[in-house]
Image 1 (cartoon, rainbow, N blue to C red):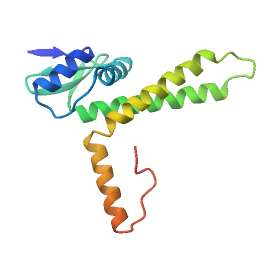
Image 2 (image 1 turned 90 degrees about the vertical axis):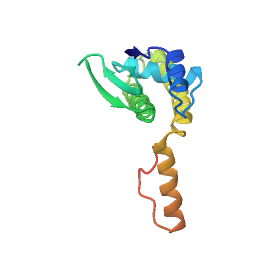
Image 3 (image 1 turned 180 degrees about the horizontal axis):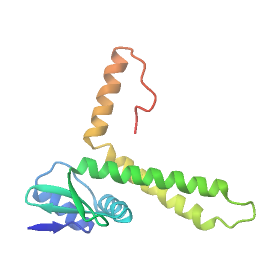
Image 4 (image 1 turned 60 degrees about the vertical axis):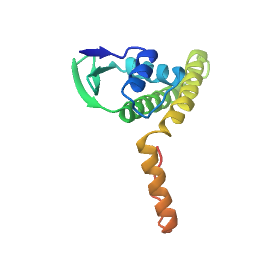
Length: 146
């Protein structure tokens, strides 16, 4: 039976129930769910599997919690870029208070998401690669970090 993980409590409970060694607090889980929802996605669990559901296309793909966190981080990054561009393009006399407040919220979310991303396999691989490159004195390619 498929269960929609539509709020932070359900996501946290699913992670614990399936004994997935990736812990989230309520604020982290709510932030992730919020970004997915804002982009038209939801999470569904069915048996032991986690699916990312495209609510518009009505399709779903097999996913992991690491991929879900990465998608939320990417969404946050894109929204920050768009909002900064809007603020920069605003006329001198234009009221941009709402956009500045929105940007402030996005930056707060970025801090939360960065903390979660540090626990993903992706960050572990990045750290491992950087450590190996440092030990070998190999130049680190541009764009190596998230």
